[in-house]
Image 1 (cartoon, rainbow, N blue to C red):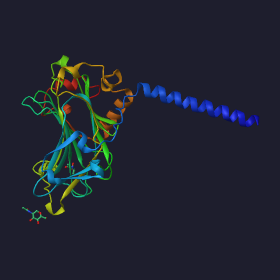
Image 2 (image 1 turned 180 degrees about the horizontal axis):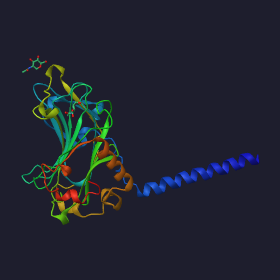
Image 3 (image 1 turned 135 degrees about the vertical axis):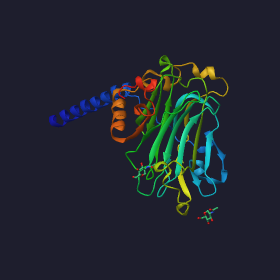
Image 4 (image 1 turned 120 degrees about the vertical axis):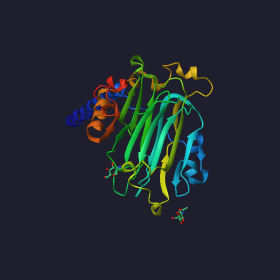
Length: 301
Ligand SMILES: *[C@@H]1O[C@H](CO)[C@@H](O)[C@H](O)[C@H]1NC(C)=O
Ligand SMILES: *[C@@H]1O[C@H](CO)[C@@H](O)[C@H](O)[C@H]1NC(C)=O
């Protein structure tokens, strides 16, 4: 009897410690909130080649198709200023050389701001490349390229952008693979006043995508299909009044814990840089003899 009571007490103590560790951990952690799944039509519309998009489960899942006739794409209905933008994608399987699947935010004007994920396909069994870029005021040239630590054609993975006045973070699942800090004090423009829409597309880019354009799209392996789900958008919709969204501190993505990466996230970013980075414009001294200004405030480039 006594033995059993003590067993219960220790079990309670153990549970309490676990809960405490979880709460403390949760209070300092800064992984973006998990988006809820909503159907495509809630937030998005097709942009071009409507007949190359297929809908499943009432629009909860969609497929984009690329064939030798055309690719296709879609965009968000709303424009957003700050938020967390997420998409779950299963990339084109098999021989995807020459194809590019993109997921990006853009303000689409002449001095445009843009935040890009581009997935460059490859021959069967060869690794995809994830290329990212950031444009501010129409200026890009900030490419980074990595290999992924998993095969992106086997299952859905989430790709997301956290954007607030302090930083833009690119996430693959919950791992930060890139951060673009607000370096306004160094004279670098940061996207803050141009609302962006979210875009995605699948198209043929065999003039550059795979091994710099050496590998061409093999049309006999088509049609090429990418799967999507989870169309929730967590952003401040600003088509009406951009000023409203610029008023900070009101949304979860503006809060303190999202203004910088925490130590754990920095460690994970460093892991990506050490093990998976192929190219980083910040360290390309041939192209940029002096390091681009925004790279200087990065903690460990
Ligand atoms: C496109 O591909 C289909 C199937 O492989 C083929 O029958 C057709 O001739 C191709 N069309 C062109 C314009 O290449
Ligand atoms: C494709 O595979 C080749 C050979 O493994 C590799 O060099 C290249 O980086 C891969 N990815 C792309 C998109 O070219």
